Length: 229
Image 1 (tube, one colour):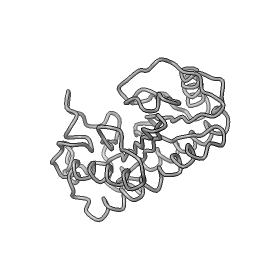
Image 2: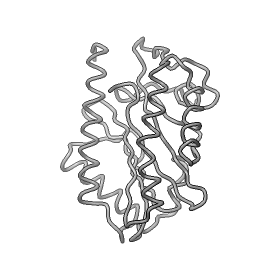
Image 3: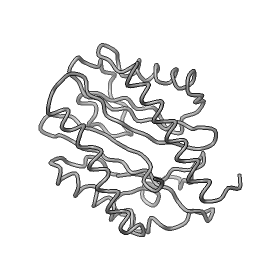
Image 4: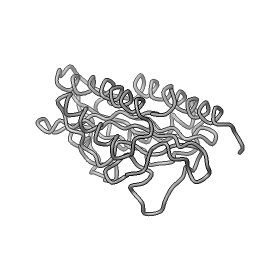
């Protein structure tokens, strides 16, 4: 598919806007206590198929609640029932036509002020990291990862993941088998994030914020497009 860079950016933003619409419906109709993480994930899958035309997800659906929010993406923790006064996040990678979205948000059940403070820290931290990236978009993946850790600490939390983002694009996006460095915002990636992809096109990135509350054994998660506004 031959498209201009402007068109690529527009398609990715459109995919993200569609993901946002899905998440709004998830929050309104599906997030509730008494349901298991797996059952909620299955309900989200059905909703995406029936109401949002989603046929494919480019990565596994992730629904984590309570202490499971601390577990890395790669883990598959035991299923857990979402409680009355809980915290949970949803991380989805839906494909809209041939364009990938990657979207994550944190939800709160109940009125716990510390859980709300954690959730409400996510977007401001994300915006601060993006602002610093926008000042120098040629920075390396490692430099942006260090910024993500710094901003999490400034907000009173810990950045609790080995990465702070990755590539996104036309499905399937560029991959290097068994490599967890070059195409990720992570320690050890000394390549400029402005380096073109192997197809010669601009690479587009997702920025992830993982805020861990080690004292209370929980975490919040927030992700969306970094390089398209």
